[in-house]
Amino acid sequence: MPANTTELEKRLWAAADELRANSKLKSSEYSVPVLGLIVLRYADHKFAQAKAKLATQSTGRRTIGKADYQAKGVLYLPENPASQTSSSSPKAPTSARPSTPP
Image 1 (tube, rainbow, N blue to C red):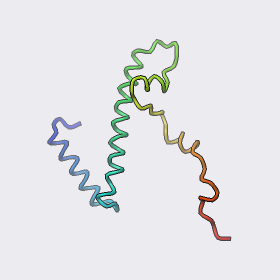
Image 2: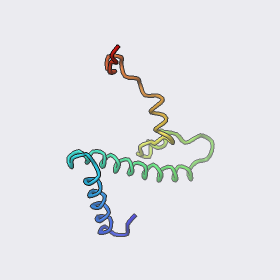
Image 3: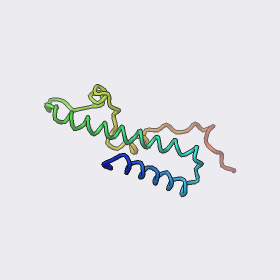
Image 4: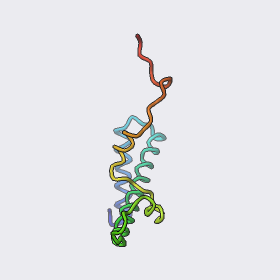
């Protein structure tokens, strides 16, 4: 992470300029994915801190789980969330699926 806010500000403006130049999104549309990434990064940082703290406090008598992270006020992030959501996501109803011509 940059040592001072001036360097951070320069990096953020450079990233915004890159996004404006190389994205098909309008400036009013790319705030949503950018803010989403910021929130995910923050959640990941807090999760890593809580994981390290819980690991030092663990006695080994039971496994650390979702409730332990929630007790610390941290959003629980599973190890591989992409594979869990793709395998357990519900299928779209037949009426919502695009029809193919006969």
